[in-house]
Length: 317
Image (cartoon, rainbow, N blue to C red):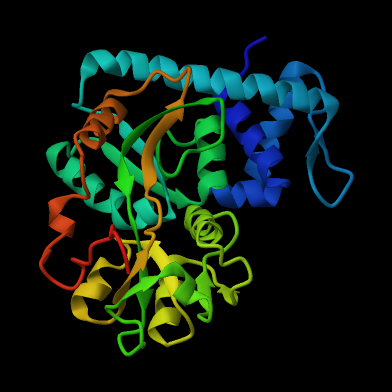
């Protein structure tokens, strides 16, 4: 009995998507073609793999067993290719990179562009999601190398710290606290704009409010860093964000910084990959670029003498 790897991949997509139509859309295939691949796979193993009786296609008991083996087989195949490409170097291959929202939006595109310029024959892709989403993709092998702000909570991942990400309190430029030094207790009457639950930035914000004993402070939750920045700019509240996500707005005077004592703790920027994974040469090369970082790339930090030069550590108010 010979299992066709492409049919296994199609079968896994049907299980993951919960239907033939959704899988076909994801794979850019016709639904009849997807159904045919699954039927041929069922004929090969002489078992029904997909329960088609309900509104959602689900794996049968036999299908669940095969799905687990299929994932392992496909991952092993990827690792075999990566091992071969270790010998080939960077003359070909691919880089499947992932990042949580802050680094995925404000750091990785710059680094990836520089990497692509140096290695034009490497096919590059970037996935951006929250901590849980990126962790799941790394564990499943859909992303080879991930970069997090904060430590991912998975024993399946090997992690190493790259550098620290500092936070800054931002307000609208006409806010009474703009460019001021304040004690944390002076923020008790302010409304905080918070990121959505599940984001690394929300964890940072929650930890800072706990450290400052501002447990009952008024707050509004909004999705995404860009939305939070626009809300602060519109005067809806104040917010604590990564210094790198607001650098441009601070330099342009669109937002203003507030120096808070005690300052919020920094967050580690962490590179991660599945423990048993054999990294492709492209992944090793990009990881090397990350290891050489000791600060946010200088190309992104122009005009350092501008408004962003607000010290984040002070001895008093």
